[in-house]
Structures are given as structure tokens and as C-alpha cells.
Amino acid sequence: MNRLISTALILTLTLVAKAQDPVPKVVRGTIDRIEHFQSMYVTERNVDIWLPEHYSESKKFAVLYMHDGQMLFDAESSWNKQAWNVDDVVTNLLAANQIKDFIVVGIWNGGSTRHSDYFPQKPFESLSKIEKDTVNAQLQRVAIVTNTGFRPQSDAYLKFIVKELKPYIDKKYSVYRNRKNTYIAGSSMGGLISMYAICEYPKVFGNAACLSTHWIGTFTPENNPVPTSFLKYLSNNLPNPKKHKLYFDCGDKTLDQFYPDIQKKIDQVMIEKGYSPNNWMSKYFPGENHSENAWNKRLDIPLLFLLGK
Image (cartoon, rainbow, N blue to C red):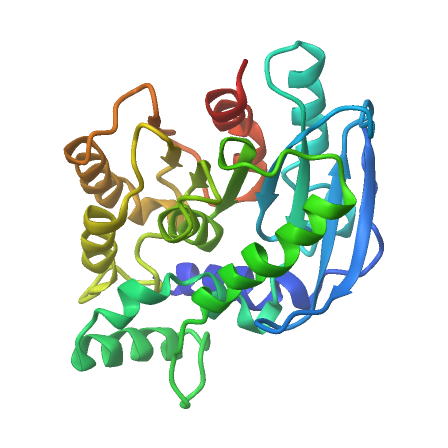
């Protein structure tokens, strides 16, 4: 457990702190950087927009919003020398004519605010005071929060995306603005906030990919009320399966070891709420860990499922 706590600290506290500001280098396509995007709702942060090689103002593109933007494109500029290599994966799928045309909006996380930005707010607020105190204590134990207490601000983070960033992208780039062509994706805490986004804004986001979703919220499964709160939230807030598609997955090593049993319960909720293989996929990858290298290896699966032709 101590090793996992150390991993949690590294993932959460160093994700931005050791990331550098240079624009990531990509093998395919180009990156547009918005330096320190200003927001009324969250701390300023960089946004990297990846455009495929054939991007043109003469046609429309779908949009994929992704969290932890500093980890998406260039391993050399990331803190752990790993990356999703999104540009490579997407370019190969586009070259094979397997997916629709789209751009990627990589939203940098806020470093010290990452956990509070990405932690679904309404499920947390549904907890009793004793349960909130338990979550707070568990996060204090791994130095995610101070003694001032844990306060999720994911509602504000989603407002930043929906009310500020998306209008900017819609205006500057040649993209579709409708729900059907608006996607959101992330891993770990980024998986949680992607799930939360499609539930809170079902008219904005039509599709979500949640890889290695951090269903435990803290970093211990023991005496943890968080997974149950997420199950209840999804049961009451999943969007219409006729108009939305969701993808979930997990491995079973490092932090991912805590997810498979919870994911099975999530899958049962999906079935109960009317989701079927046409609009929902849940994959299990034995032996895979909680890392950008692992997510890179299987990124093509959610892309083909959600954006496939």
C-alpha cells in the first residue's frame, strides 16, 4: 500500500509541477498552443490543440476534448517520459479511413488543483458529513489536500470547458458544434471527470471515453464511501442511451488493481439504464497498469468505438 500511496503522490502532485512549458513535438499534424487560458471558473492553464495533417477551413471536423493535456503528445516534455502519443494513434486510424475527421483539444490540468477539478462534485456533496470527513482524511493521508479540507470544484471546471473553452474552439476552428460530434476523454481522475461531463451536460457531449477510471476517488478501497456515491449518481444521471455512447476500461496492476470489481458494478448499472453494445463498451486488460504507456496501447479501441466510421 505504501508503494501505491507513493504512486498516487507522484501522479497527482508532479503531473504539472515537473512538466515544462514548451509546445509538445508531434510526429504528425500540428499543435496550436493557447498559453495560460484565462477563466472565470478555474485557474489559468495551457491548452494544446492538435490539428491533423489534412486540417482545412474548407470542411468541418469533430472535436475531442481530453484532460491532462501535458501528457497527450510528447513523452520528452512529460514528467515521467511517457505520453499517450495521440497524434500517432489518430493519424494511423485516419490513414486507414477507420474514423471520422476530428481535432483534439488537450486541456492541461491545474497541478495542485487537479484532484479537486476532476473529482465529480455532486456525488461528493451527496455524502454524509462523516463520509466527507472520511474522504478528507484519506486524501490528507497522501497529501492531496491540506487541513483546510477537500472541496471538489468540478462543476466550475466543466463550466470552464462548456462556457469558455468550447465557444473559443467553435469560433476559431472549422468544427461541428453539435452534441453528436463533441467528445470528451481522459484517464484515472480524467476518466471520472469525463463520465461526469457527459452526465452533467448531455446536450453538449455525445460521447465519453473513460480509461482506468479512478472509481475509488481517494487512494484506498478500505472504508471508502466514494464508489457507492458514484454508482448512485450514475443510476440517477446517466444520459439517454439512444443519444450517447460511453466507453470504460481498466487493467489490474498498480492503481488499476482497485478498479475491476467496481467496474463490474458500474457495468450492471449501465445495463439497467438501457445501455447495450451499440452505445456502451467496457473492456478489461489483465496485466496492464496505470500509465500513459498502457493507455497509448489501447487508445485505438475507444477511438474506433466512439468515432469509427
